[in-house]
Figure 1 (cartoon, rainbow, N blue to C red):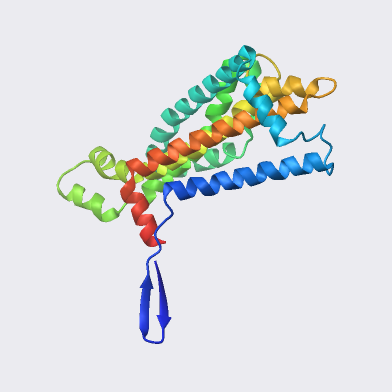
Figure 2 (cartoon, rainbow, N blue to C red):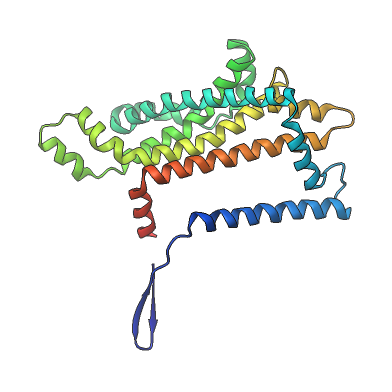
Length: 277
C-alpha cells in the first residue's frame, strides 16, 4: 500500500501482491532468457562449445538421462541421502532450538560452542566422518544433518524471541506452566519461522549431498555421476551440465512445494507481512 499526494488531496493506492500465475510466468521468462543467453554464447563462438554446450544440447541430454537406469539409480541414491539427512536435521534442530530459545541459561552456556561449530564447512569434515563412521550413505547423511540443522536451529530460536510476551503472561496468569505456554503460544507463533528454516535447510542439504558425492568420488549419486564425467578424457561437459540441470530443477521444485505449503498453512503470517510492507 502506498500514499500519494495530488492537488486535491491525499490518495491511497493499494498494491496487491502478484498472483501465482504472474509469479510463475515471470520466473519462466527469466529461465527462458537465461537459456537463450547460454545458447547464443555457445552458438556464436564467444564461448567454446566444448566448455559450455548449447542449452538445447544440455536439456536434450538431461531428458535422455531419464531413460538411463544407471542415472536414475544415481538420482535415487542422492534423494535418499538428502531426505534422510534433512528429516534428521528437523528432528534434532527444532527441539534443540526450542530448548535454547526458551531457557536463556542454557543458551548462554552453549552459545560459544554453537558459534564455534556453525562456521565449520561440512565438506571439511569428510575425512574425519569417513574415518569414524565410514563412507557411503552414512557419510552423506551425517554431513547433510550437520549442515542443514543450522538454518532450522537459528530460525527456531529467532521465532521464539519474537513471540508476544503479553500472550505468554496471559497464559501464566491463568495457571499454565512453562511447557503449556511453550506448546500453546510459543511454538505456534514460531512455526512460520521454523518452516522457513526448513525451506532454507532443504537447499543446503541438496548442496551438501551433491558436494559430498563429488569430493568423495565413490559409490552412487548424482555427484558421483558428475565426478566421473569430469575426470573422463576428454571431459563430458554435456553430461556434467545435464546432471547439474537435474539438481537445479529438483531444488526449484522442492522450494516451490515448500513455499506453497508454507503459504497455505500460515496465511495469517503472510498477510501480516504483506500489510507491514
